[in-house]
Amino acid sequence: MIIKKTPEDFVVREVLQAPPRTQEGPFRLFLLEKRGWNTRDAMKALADRTKVPLREIRAAGQKDKNARTAQYLSVPARFDLTCSGDGFSVSFAGYGDAPLGHPSLRGNRFDVVLRNMGKREAASAERRLLETADRGFINYFGDQRFGAVGQGGEFLAEMLVKRLYGPALRKYLSACHPEAPVAVKRRKSLVAERWGRWDEVASLCDEPHLKKMAEILRAKGAAGFRACLALIPADEMGMHFSAYSSFLWNETLSRFLADQKGALFPVRLRTGEVLQFRSLDETLALRLRTEPLATVAPDMPALPEDMGEVFLRLLAERGVRLSKFRLKEIPQAYFASFPRACLVVPEDLSVAREEDALYQGRFALRAGFFLPRGSYGTVLLGVL
Image (cartoon, rainbow, N blue to C red):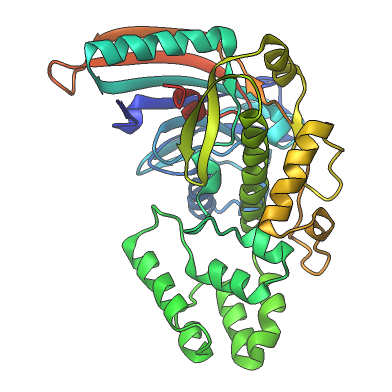
């Protein structure tokens, strides 16, 4: 089976809690349709093209690069984001009373094509997809959440929790997303090789905040590590902290499931294997559907006793304590806890089998479904 053979095989459309209004309001909403762009980079390109300050552009969610996506952006009404470019277009959609944020999003509609399957494999995949309409799936954070995670499961946020400022800064300056351009990968590799030779590292730092870090390192060396970390933009720091919190959430739930009754099977994510299910005890399934699990933060609510024990063992295994998750010394580094559903049931799921137009003699499945905000279509497809 092949998922995302082309971006057109994975189409995602946002559904807002309240649709844009025709009546004028303090904020204008725009529809960003894109292919081959992640949301963050697309917003930067829009800001540069339209001269709208990036800080004024808000999104309700982040969308993958390897897909065709349609999502909403908001700006104060005095700004106009209408434009088009290579792989994206932005059109006026209406008005709103407030800037968009995660609570603005109801969920996403997915239309996907799964390719290159034999007849038996296609029939099995169709059956399993239809079964999720009744039983649901474990609502893990998907791989898109972990783009900044290094080899060996290294999390910048965990390094900060452990107060390992030097390794954390080195990771920030030398690690990059797997899909980064070759030139960026080479430059960051050189930063790692030349770490400690600050004049040489400075020559590889081209962005304004990186140049400021380089100046601090040249002047103070290791004594400037913490000051450099405080210069990481808040949105980037937030991505690192979200990745670590999401990993801990996934691991806690997967390890909890390992001790339960049911037909479980492993699914591989970038951060390791987690457990999905074919069947669960009915009482447990109901609990997972109705009782959310809080994500990690210093002020997170107490977890149920059984899940709490799993969580504390996980922290001990990784050599961290929850009391250390509060980093007052780096203002933009923080964890925010929120309740997340453990088990999600897709809505409006449909599946159609057909001959694969790209692979002669093979079969494809066209599937459509709606998932609530924060749930990943790729995680649902992992049940196949």
